[in-house]
Image (cartoon, rainbow, N blue to C red; front, side, top):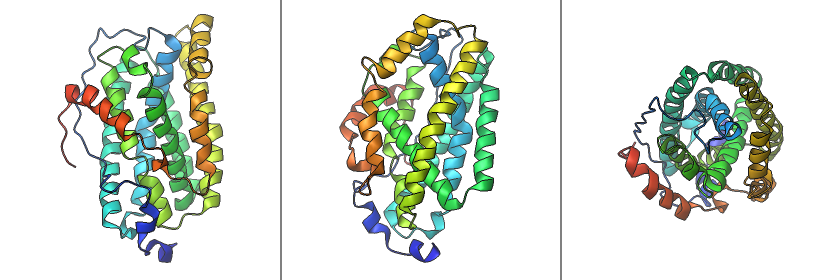
Length: 291
């Protein structure tokens, strides 16, 4: 592995656009007390699903940073080294801002502290039991999931416009940056000679655990909120995700491309879509600064 890491990694970055260095921003989000309880489309399932995902970000982002940082000193490509620093900076801000958001939601009676501890327990188990290569493969797989959700869900459809305008910017910012750094962990994995077997099998694991974990946490939140038997909300959200427009169903073709030996995250180039989102959302909430 060490010998492989010393190779010139330019070949592994042929599909990443030149100069695609994640920009580290310094966001400031203010969550006011009169934000509606169900701030996405006045819908419990939709809102609590994103709340459950938000609970996973502080421990999850730290795990992603550590898995990439483990190999940082072994990377020789100057552009990839810059991209790693941008990736770490963006993920660190994601963890910080979602920690603040989770605290706001916790104060409003949504029990995210317990969910965050559950995710932390899983991250700790993986640190103890998985090899560094497998930990990085896990990051690569989850980054593909989050990039798909960012580009083909939050930025492509009307989800952000359906949210309370004080809540939407944090999700727009996160989605934009997930797209910007979607290939960094993958490029590091290729540069250090990560195996295709570990990359593909770890995605199989993530494909089971990510939806299962998210669904169980959503059910917990719905039960605690007295909404578990809200069939209208369940039916509407399921139709939205899998029926019409079926945003999750429409992710499947891009998801399955991950299993191709020729896969690269930038084979799906969403820069035009992301630039439109930047103009609409980022200028309203933060100044951008080079990290």
